[in-house]
Image (cartoon, rainbow, N blue to C red; front, side, top):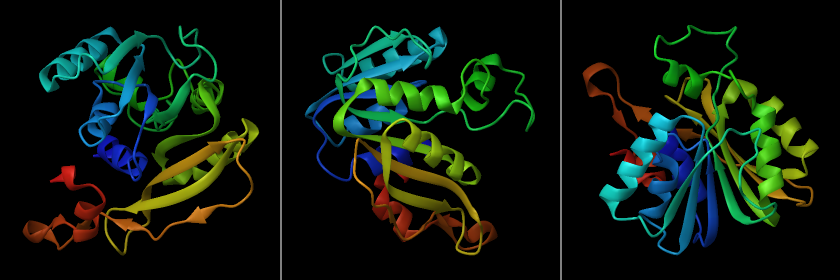
Length: 219
C-alpha cells in the first residue's frame, strides 16, 4: 500500500523524462507509476539481488522491458548514474531504526524495513545528487519522522513543497507522510488535507472513497 500511495502522489501530473526509484525493491513504485504514465524511462536501484530479480520479472510480466533499467547499489553509492541526470526521484526508504522495533527473521525484509547499511540521510543526499535542478523528489515515511525528513531535505537543497499526512482512520493519528521536494526551490510549503484510508469498523472496514480516488489501484 505504501508503494502505491507514493506512486499515486508522484503521478498527480504527467510524468516524463528519466525517473529514479531509489530502493526499488521489487519495483512497485516505479511500475505503479508506469501503468498510468507512458512517457518516462525508469531506473530502479536496489542493493538486494533477490529483490532485483523479482523487479526484473515484474517488468517482464508487464511488458516494460524497454522502459526500465535496474542497477545494484545502495543509497551511499557509487550508483553508475551521472549527477543531476534524473527528472524525478521516488524514495520509499526503510522506516525504522534497528534499535526500535522487532527485527525480521528474513534478512531481506530487515533491509527493507530497518536502517541497517544506510540511513535516511543517505537516501536524501543521493536524491539531491542525482535529480536535476528544479525537479522534484517524492518520499514516503513514518509520520513521526517528518521533522527529521524536512530538516534533511532543506540541508540538501531539496526544498519541501507539499506535505500530505496519511491516517488509517479519521480519528487516528497520522501513520505516514508523503512529501514532495523541489531541488533549489523557493520558500513555501503546502500542507494538504489529510488522506484517510479506511472507514467502517470490524467486518465493515473498507477503503474510503477518498483513498480510492487518490489511488484507484489500492482496490
